[in-house]
Image (cartoon, rainbow, N blue to C red; front, side, top):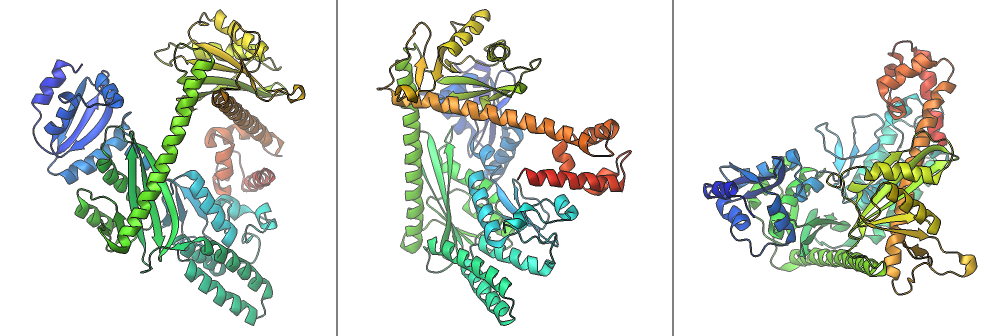
Length: 612
């Protein structure tokens, strides 16, 4: 039901381009949109409500006010919408929130010995940026490939400047060891330039350069260097064999297409450099309250805002509004002409169709996975004889090392998949011996003492263990007087010695485990939840243990007593920041000297190498 004051404000809205901000009862902006005609767009929310899906209806139920900002053109509305989404981070906006964090690779050629780094934003610092990449996995794979091929340094600037002996990376031939060997800046930068050409997709040029360099080293009888170049040449050639020529004109271009269905969308970007297809990236999105045609320009704006090197041509599967505006903006950024086309025939149309097929296949895979996850949730409901779907599943896992640093972790699955926004970590205090019951009581008490309005109850609480652990959890919930608020189940590992084929599910009021032979998908879902809780708890406990060990490590360095340790920790706020500090920064602290700072930096480098 739309409140009357909102409808009255709608009636006064003009037919003009601009941006609208939807607000909830607390005045918080929950959605930002743009329109060529504000009144016409708002009528689709407030007047023509028959065709709304569940998501739109959920948004409308929360709206208690809205605000409009009139602009002079659709161009201005587009830019203003982008800026407001980044400013307010609205709950129901998806596209530009996700897009701003695409990972990139950065190389600063102003350094004498440049390194290649992962970053999230482009700064105006005259460095070279490559990307964006569709995921951390993608950028890490590229970084590993580059470092394996060209053996660029991996250490941070502080470690590099203060290192006195080769690190493990040099010993396993993963780095040139330039910090401790006679490798000139010019020689190292040649390697970096090769890496840059490779990142630009100029693999053929890299091969030609390496062949000439190998021949020159051989003629000057520098056979060891010639062998190193030969190995790099061989590796680059193998990679190039896997790349396909898709554009006979050998131009640089991006081909972008999308597929959408059932409220989901995948945008596919095929990067063609020198005619070779060097990467195909998929970017999935929830359509939310936008049409696919609106999502594409929003994606282009955010994607190319964070792109290091722009191509000279962009091919699209669908026409977009403000195409000329995009061309001018990108051409200014590139400092060269960037053209945007929607080809209707010929070779370029074939490339766009290829991107569209890739997008459709990726969307189909994702929707199929969602269907399977949803089917597992329905199957789990029937298996556990629940009166409602277990849409929210919570699982806790405790972790300690001989009673030291006890912690617990909570993971949440929603609709059959991890919901990481709901994950929680718990530090368990006043315990120095392993005690699962005491730990569970502390953690469940802290978790469920909150009002459901602040943190909703789960539909299903999963316990790692059999009848004993389940009974223990139920006793805790009974003490808290919430044992009837949701379903609780225990998951015990199978006993292979007894010939058991599956893990066992226990529920309250039943002594034997459930028969899961006809509900394997439901069992697999619970196994995923349990394994994720175990992984999350173990990682948290390990980090706590390493942090404590690292801080106590300062006590073992001669010359650093309690006062200096306190000064270091208060100034740098932790061991990681001390590791990243220079000798000069450390020596500037009260009580520290240049010699002691050098000793500390060297000790920290040594412990870092041991942890590689």
